Length: 216
Ligand code: AMP
Image 1: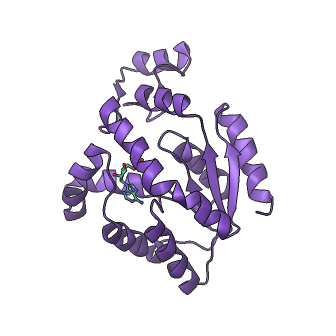
Image 2: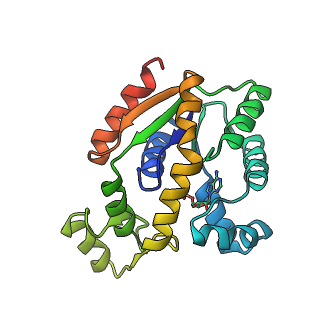
Image 3: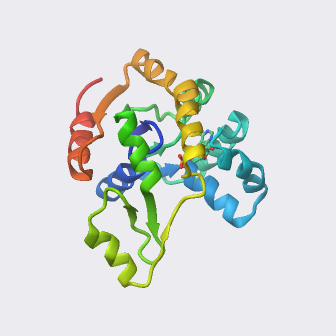
């Protein structure tokens, strides 16, 4: 199972990718998580990426392609992998195709997580992580019990640096301009599968599993 997850920020790519990783035992590769760790550790990559990420823009293709090359060559990929947040530009998609063909591991599917714009805004503006459990929560969408659980454990609800309204707008604009063209790119490659990503986590996951099993 070799999958690329496509979708706007807030479409639930990360959440669904992690679930798939646990269920199927495949590698989950999130370029956003890799960059955030690099920023936290203060590495050269982190220093180069930090300001770009905070503004909601994209890190350069060269940097990202180097990063993904290194990652794909150093991981166990026999059971498959799910790429979350890469590719984000047509150049990244073309280079990824070459790279994977060279490794004899072409993609099976490009899953598009389809969500309405208003829902995306709510998900992104309200997104928090519990500092104790690491659980992803949302101040508008999580149940009062879930939110209280974090507080009762003495945790704080942490907001991602780039989840403020200005940056969110930028990230959605950048998605439209740079990443949305990948939908037709993967349609032409006969790899695109659409997943309705507006329901609950479980409903979306069900749709995602069904989509993976269909031929594009
Ligand atoms: P994410 O967690 O996937 O939303 O990524 C957070 C931020 O990391 C993005 O807004 C970009 O600044 C950067 N980033 C992650 N993946 C890529 C990529 N494939 N190309 C360029 N920038 C990326």
